[in-house]
Length: 186
Image (cartoon, rainbow, N blue to C red; front, top):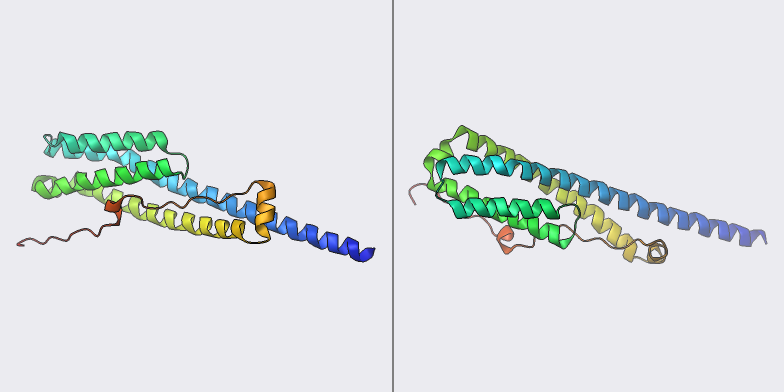
C-alpha cells in the first residue's frame, strides 16, 4: 500500500514538473513576443519622420511614400500577436521601407542629409534589436513546441490546453534576397 502511495506521489510530482515547464516556456514566449512588439512599435514610430524627411527631397515620389505610410497603418492595426497576419503586415512594411531607402540612391542631397542619416542609423539599430528579439522568440517557441510534441509531455499539454505556437518567420521572398552591392564607377 505504501508503494502505491509513493508511485502516485512520484507521478504527481512529475506531472507538476511538466506543467510548470510548460507554463514557464509559455511565459517566456509571451515575454519574447512583447520584446518583438516593442521593437515593432519603435519602427512604426520612426516611419513618419522618415517619410517627412524623404518628402522634403523627393516629393514627387508620392507612390513610394504612400506605400510606406499605408503599410505602416496596416501593421499598426494588426499588431498584437505572433500570428500570420501580423508577420505578413510587418514583412510588407519592411519591403516598403527598403523602397524608401532605395530612393536615397537617386537623391544625393537626401543621402547627405544629417537627419536622414540619423534616422537610417536609428532604423538599423531597431532592425538589429528586432532580429535579436525574433531569434530569441523563435528559440523559446522551438523549445515549447518540442516539449508540447514530446511524449509524455504531450498528454499533459493536451490536458491543460497548451498548444504549439507559430514561429516569427520571413514570409516575403524579398526579405530573403541578398541586397545587391553597387559601387561608384560601375
